[in-house]
Image (cartoon, rainbow, N blue to C red; front, top):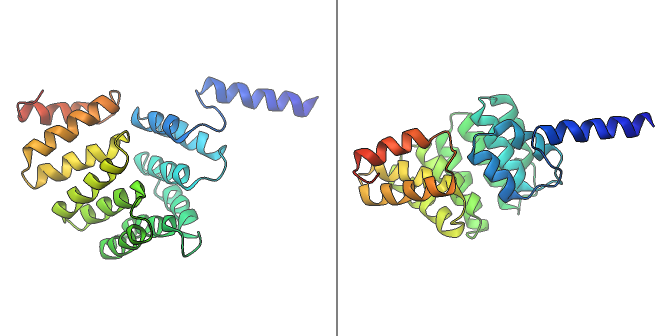
Length: 202
């Protein structure tokens, strides 16, 4: 009876927090898009091991400035088998946290080489190239991630940022407009709307 009571109690706490067990990556991304990073982390902890969920949890820790927790979560990916592209995605993210952009790009390139159809591999490559200040390369990588997974909001956001750095106003506006449609409650919304107004696109 005590165990049942505790189980019900935990379930009520999770329900109150808007967290459900076994949520899909799309549901977790919607939480992330709305800035509900702690809810993503809590839900991810109760989800079967899935590298996509682990990666989103690590990104959520970074948004909350939990550097140690983010590193530990990325290291879970980096511990996967050598043939697994997620291993290199994790290694790339750890390298960025270690201020090693060259190592981050190298690992991300390996992830892309192992599975060119994995959106997160290209997304991570974009983050790594951004850390190395290669914004043209980053724009291309984020573009590829958004092409592979058009419904994922943040490749569009970072593509918009990268294209703005290389003076491609048309592509900046296009990606930012898509980002706002996909993530209307994103914390970055005021920033994006401001840039679009500057471009005369909002």
